Length: 173
Image 1 (cartoon, rainbow, N blue to C red):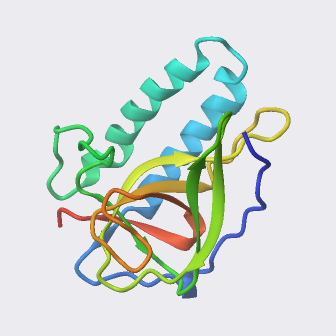
Image 2 (image 1 turned 90 degrees about the vertical axis):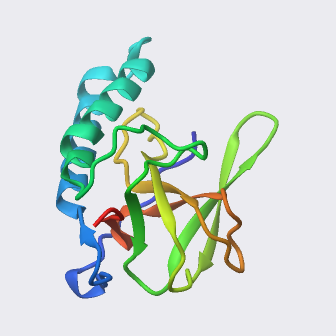
């Protein structure tokens, strides 16, 4: 994969939450930390590691995050790959977004500085990162899918943003 990008955490003053949405930041960060530790210290470099990681990721997401939703669903992922009820809310004005571009041999994530218009609906899809040379991950990015169309996002468009630039929100409350 690509090179790791330096991590920058937004301070509490940068957080803006829609009053009607419950944030799940603490629950999500615990989930992310568990995944990072398991990959970096137990599964990394093992041949069944990727499959085991996907199963563990799904189980931990349900136990640590999805069960905390106001109206948990057992529906699984949508046709577009997002997790129903779990949203991504931009916490800063100018979020650097990454958009995938497939090449012959890999997927390249291109950076674009955009302001996501208020009212855009962005659904959570997965955590992701770029592996360091030694295979370690920080899971600094959140991958999502657009449900509504904006000037630069079409329905179903996949994107990634830094976890520090977003709030993870309960869309069922």
